[in-house]
Structure formats: structure tokens, C-alpha cells
Length: 319
Image 1 (tube, helix red, strand yellow):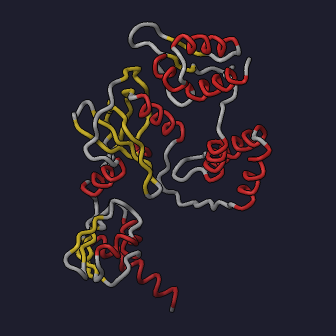
Image 2 (tube, helix red, strand yellow):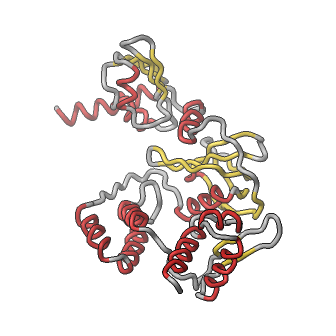
Image 3 (spheres, helix red, strand yellow):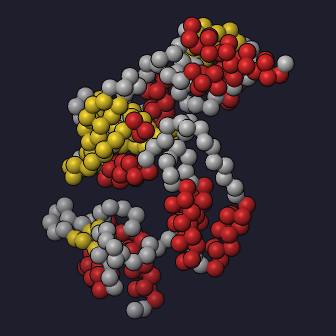
């Protein structure tokens, strides 16, 4: 192969690895060649062992099929380093992924170019993780991966979902975005049964199954999925009510807020309301403890009892 042809085929392979399906016209436009040249290059990739599927007709296209004999991925330097960083720091809010991530990192390191291997080695030596055994809710990595694919391909999925009250029901949704917040993972999806947008906590979902039915992407109300999820979480009912009037400007309190669902409303230039209501009494206590100024509290009796007990334990410990 000529140098130009080799470079073009590597670029073609890289493009096929970034998207589920490409039309011949799109590939030709990206590579600045004819559609006929794209077809010839696809045939060359197949001769080299890359399983490239194609479909004829107006809606036809090319995609790199999955398979056990798929040759290694092609990653640019910045992509390889980004993968190494992600593996090394994986992965908050997921169950049992730490050891798997380190094994994957070891495999990646074996095939890295020498110019990157030193950077990754320095990263491994300079970064230390802390294993927090909080016993809190954790998402299943396999479930997260399945939903990530469904979001990418706009494929309808089904699963069983347990609500905050303990009721379980089957759901059929069009996944749109995954959002991580406060150690939890959330799925933003359009619920086909309820004909509305819903936010699902992944630690409460089970039995995710792809239907094979792909649909056009829906337009999300609002441009930012994270902000949309935060607003839905803020508006959701909670088991325990706790509202603090804080003697500090709203912007100062927002700078210290750890969770986007924390509801903060300015009263004037020097005070604001913080709605710390939650299903978890310890989380309410952590939110209030993080406030940067004095406050008065309007809360349910169980919240006040929990705060008093916590304060008394702290006082006994310091006495």
C-alpha cells in the first residue's frame, strides 16, 4: 500500500470505531474521496480481518461489527492517555469495577507507544485512590454499559424499576442521557408508557433488556441534561422535609453546595432559603453541615431528632 492509502485506511478505521453506522457518502466526505474509493477501502479492511457490515439501499451504510476476532482499536495519543486516566481513576458509584479497570489498564499499557508509556507510568505512581466503604447504593457496571449503548443508538429498553416507596413496576423507555451526581448514577429517558420524561436511579433498576427497536432522538426540554436532571430531582417528593434560612447570599451557598438537587432560593442580598429535604436523614445532616453560615431550620420532627442525636454524640465525644 502507498503511504497515502495506508493513512486513509487508518483514518477510515478510526471513523468506523467512533460511530455505530456511517453512510458511504458521509465517509467519502470525511475522507475527501469518492464513494467508490470508500467501497474499495472497505473491501481492503475486510481482507485484513476487520468485520465491516454493510447494508444496501437509501438507508444503507457501513458499521464495524462486534466479534471475538476484532483486531485492536486504533487510538490517537490523547485518546489512549484519556482511557488510561479513566481506567486508573475508575469508578465512583459502581460495584466491583476497580480490579477489572486495573487489569484493563495493564493490557493497555502493554501496547502503548513508548512515548505514552512513561506518562501513564507516572500517572500510576502519582495517583492514589481511596476505597470508601460507605455501604451506600451502587450501580451495576454491566447495567450502566447497556444503557450507555442504548443512549448512543436511541434504542428502546425495558427494565424493572423500584421506586423510593419500594414499589416495583416494569418500564419501557427511550434512553437519552446518563448523569452522575453525588455518588449516584441517573438515567434520563422518555417513558413510553407515561408519555413523559423520567429520571431513574440506576441502583434501583434491574433486568435491563434491549428491544432492538431504534427510534429518532427526542428533543430534550432544555439544552443541559445535567441541569434537567437536577431540576427533576429537586422537584421530586422526599420522605423528610428540611428547609434552612441561611444568613448568607445565595451565590455563596451555591459555591459550597455538594449536590445539584440542593434547592437554593435567594430571599434578599444577604439571606437565602436552602431546601435540604431528602429521603436520607444522614444526607440532610451533611447538607446542613456544609452550609457556610448560621441558619434557622424548619424541619420534620424526625429530622430534628436525628440532628439532636448527632449533635449530642459529637458533644459527648468532645467532652
